[in-house]
Image 1 (tube, one colour):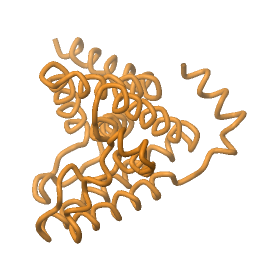
Image 2: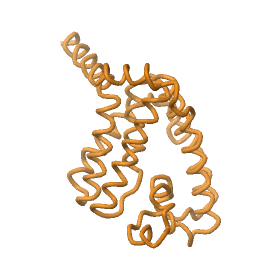
Image 3: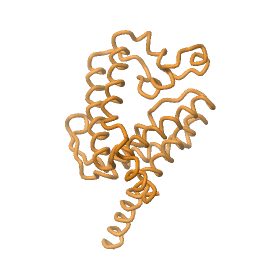
Length: 212
């Protein structure tokens, strides 16, 4: 897969839109501002196949970025925007590492796959695609450090491990639509970042053997 992605990047990489994460974060920020100012409008952004068929076509995109529930406090809004800053950091770093084509494919494949799950099996959100991006970021930049809850310094590799465990647990506990969405996000992650994940796991395995 790495060789195919490399060939695609050499041939088509120059045509790939750059800085996609800026538009993703911008749209997400707008939707969350709406959720804060007009909570009653939030359900208009969720995926509803019947509503899409009636002409509310924006739902096929906004469901990936909309809030799961209305934002009811200024603290919640500030917290969301701090989260968006981290999302932008992850996305811009991954694009710089992968190139625009691979990063764009990550969101295109994951987004279309999640949309297909929502249409076929019931409403889902973009939560698992975001989780997959966090795991990819942790694999590429394991030593990157953040302040958890603005207090506790933690390396992002541990967040990646916790997120992967959360996805695995949720897969067995969630309903069918959520399981399908998790499977799509995991497949997208393995497809676009499988080589790096494999190398990280081999590195951990070698470290364990050397310590024994």
